[in-house]
Length: 186
Image 1: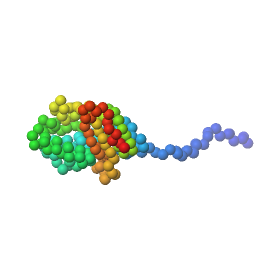
Image 2 (image 1 turned 90 degrees about the vertical axis):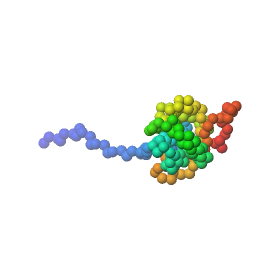
Image 3 (image 1 turned 90 degrees about the horizontal axis):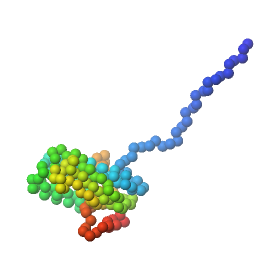
Image 4 (image 1 turned 60 degrees about the vertical axis):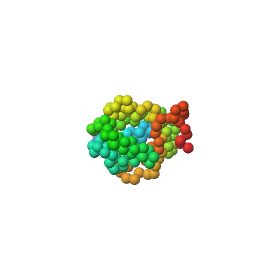
């Protein structure tokens, strides 16, 4: 009898277990160990989106509604929120809503220019707010450069509609003659 031919095919290799953790999608507002410019821009994008939703609510209704106030309250601390309420009260009383907002405003555009300070629960940044292509008709007020935004972490997410852990504690330009931002992230 003839000897059996030697096997030339190798048996398929057993699958190797992958020891790597599967990557989970990154939560745009989850607070990293180190707050960097990319992270702050993601937070600013969330702020801009929420503000755009509030503006669309105001434009659609012609008034500052409880829904718009709730949206603003999700990004502004009480003092800054009160400023927003007063601005809208003045705009609505003057009858200039159509002069300020387009009929269906697009999202705002908030662009990080410089991250001035950061800590685990605070950042101060120079931000450009560009409203012109989306919802401000008056070109003289369409873009604000060098606006300072001071934001801190405020509690925990309350539910699926709460898109930001952050609240804006203050915003505006530096006082005349002042070139450095005071240390706000102590």
